[in-house]
Length: 95
Image (cartoon, rainbow, N blue to C red; front, side):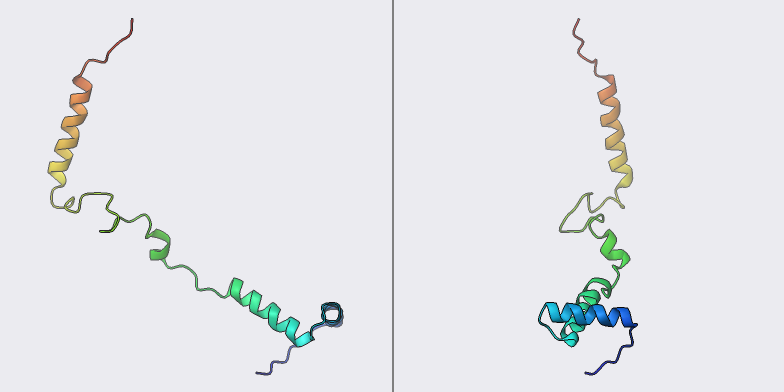
């Protein structure tokens, strides 16, 4: 594919000097530079799912019980009972 690009005189001189020093054609230098630029900058931005998928529990990585939505009151009651039981236990004191 042919692509024509207009540059100012300074850029053309720098390109010619670099190509001569590295024993490459100007075309090869520009192709490599475009390829590296596009590899770095033309990636698709991450979707919201890509950003959050590690934080959301799945069947493969369960962080919470799978029936939490249907048994939330039961789980909350168990949690509160355990919490209050810990408070009622006398702390061992070193005198």
